[in-house]
Image (tube, rainbow, N blue to C red; front, side, top):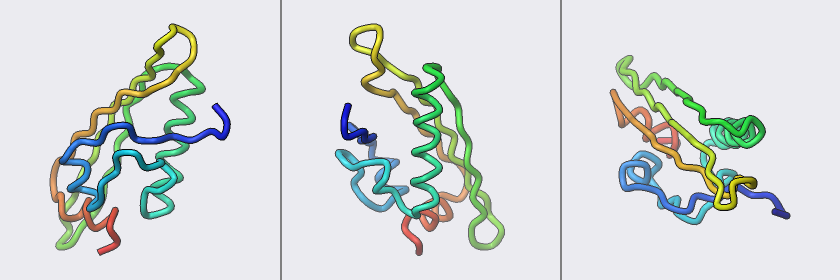
Length: 107
C-alpha cells in the first residue's frame, strides 16, 4: 500500500513496559532510539521480501555488566493467500529488563 508503512496493530503489556510507551497504532519508524527503529524496519523488509518466518535476537549490556536478551519470532500472514497484510510477532525478554528498558527510553 502507498504510502508504505509498518504499524503495530496490537502490542502486549510486557513490550509496552520494556519500551516505556504505548506502541499500539504507532509506526516502526517511531521506535527509539533511531538506530533501533532502523534495525527493526530492515528486519521487517527482509521478512516481507523473503516471505518466510524469521527469528531475530538482540543482546544489551546494562549497568553493572548485566545482560538482557530480546528474541523475536515474526511470521508473515496473508488474508488472501497472496499479499502479506500482517505479521505475527512474539517477543521474549530475559535477563536485565532494566537494561533493555534503558535502551528504548534513553535512561
